[in-house]
Structure formats: C-alpha cells, structure tokens
Image (cartoon, rainbow, N blue to C red):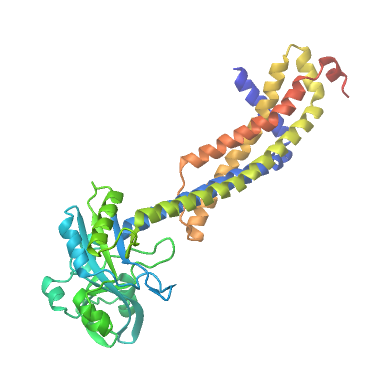
Length: 409
C-alpha cells in the first residue's frame, strides 16, 4: 500500500513539472536507445557470421598449398602447388570419418549472346557437392562419365546465370568460357553474400579434368596439383582432432622433417567464425560502453533536478516530518521519484531503440537481432542510475530539520 502511494506521489511530482521532467530524462532516453541499437547490431552481425559459416558448409575446412619462397621473398598463399589429387584420395582412404575432394580454381571470362561476365571457375569432382553441401536448384549435377571424360559442361552460380541469361532458363544452352563452348546443365541453389560482401553465387563449376584440359595453362594442366582440398568431417567427430590427424598424415606423405614447416595450410571456418564473433563482440561492448555514457549524463541530470526539487519542496518536507513522516519515509519518497523519472526515460528509450534497430535493419540494410536481454540490461542500468544519482538528493531531503523546513519561505 505504501509503495503504491509512493509511486502515485512520484507521478504527481513529475507531472507538476512535466516539461522539465521530460528534458531531464533525455540523457536516459538516448542512452537506453543507443545501448539497444548497438547490441542489436552486434548480435545481428554475429548471427550473420554463423549463417555464412552454414552456407559454406558445416563441419568443413579447406587445405590450401602453402606459400612459395623465391630468394627469401614470399610469393603468396597457394604458390607452392604442394597438394595433389592423390593427397585427397589418400586422406579419404585413411580416415573413414572424413570426405575429401580436390578442386582447381581459375579466373575466366564467360560470354553468352550479348552478355559477358568474369568469374571464378572451379574444376571439381562429383563428390564436391556432398562435401561442400551445395545443392542444385535447377538442372542436374555432373554425371560420372562427364567427370571421367572431361566433358565441356558447366553448372552456374545464381549470379553468373543472372548476368548471362537474365530471367531465361539456361539449362541446355551454351556459354563460351575463354572462347570454348560449354553446355549448361545446372544452376546452383542461391547462397547470397557473406558478411564481408563476398558473393557465393558468383561462381561456375566444371569437371576437374575439363578445367585441366581446357582452362589451366599447359604446365598446370598436365600436373596433378590442385588449388585446394575441401574436407568434411562427420558431425560426431571433433574438428580439431580431425585437423591434427590430417596434418600429421600430410606431413608424412610430403616427407617433412620435424624441423620443417607445413607445406600446406588448413583453413578452419569455425576458427574464422570465432575470430569474427570475438571481434564483433568486442566492438559491440565498446559501442555499448560509449552509449552508456549518455546514461551517466542522464543520471547527473536527474541528480541536479532532484536537488532543485528538494529546495523547492522544503516546506512540503517539513509538513510531512511534522505530521509524523520519518527520515526513512522521506528518503524513500524522493528515491522513488528519482527511479520513476529514470524508468520513464528508460521506457521511452526502449521504444526509440526498438524503432531505431528496426529502421537500421530495413532502411540501411544492416543485419540486426533484437532480443529481450539488452532491453532488460538497459532498463536495469537505468534503474541503477536512478538509485545512485537520486540517493544523495533523497538523503539531503530526509536530513532537513522539520522546524527549519517549516520556516522556509
């Protein structure tokens, strides 16, 4: 009953100076709104990263050739050409809990009718689709005879299909890849863009033997070297354990001494995800901390206005004390007013923050994820600010001598 009365009195005091009360809460309003928007953007970014990893294939990693050195100068990742078809075959044969498939990569120019487009062409085996969890949206995958014979057939990514054929069905039609004619037999299921803007649909797949015979240079085409090996691990197997097993197996196959470094690099998408999420979390915390400064500024505003209120209501305090109100009652009343003022700003800030996160997600194409936790966090922090910054004015009011308060003109 007393709590209800305190809250009612707090609203009466706030309503008596409505404009001043609203202006006082602006720091809390913008602080709460900023915290909610920043956390929503951070959570949305982390969610987007996880989705990107799923697009690239769960429980997968890629083995790439290491960097080659010429006169002590690194020529860049993948220049050593240390991986071969046999490496992939040996890994799949030795470890029953993994699937491994090699592929080569080359940049090529595609032409169809009046349209043309430059894209990456991957030379792959039939097992590539299962390892990478890529599906065919239209058409069919490569047949075993096409892979063995090195047939000039192609499967287009969604972006390439759109650039070359617009809305037309490309199945059964021909495109020219580096002046050679390829028959389109399928279109990949759309995967979209990753968080860094990479287009997963800007790609063309051809049989591995075809890429070697027609698209790679003569020297590279004759060798059995590959650009990379894609590996998929069974879900019940720890990814780190599988990576260690494969690292040891490849070192043994490549006859590397203990003092020698690896002739390959294992790129773990899960590690990439952890790094990206850690970076995103750190940035979110930093931005939320900066936004929280507004809450502290709002707290200072509440303390100032409550101190003014104590001076303005000195006579009222004296009357309450004279008719039996204890210092604890007066302290509680003013503290409730400070918290109510702070929570009023929090409610407005929550509405503004949710609206801001929604606008950021739609108008500015920013991936956001709203949840109850940041709203609860911002509200709790706002209440804490009200208590901390309202306590001194409330304490000062409770310590006013009743006789002096009644004499106040």
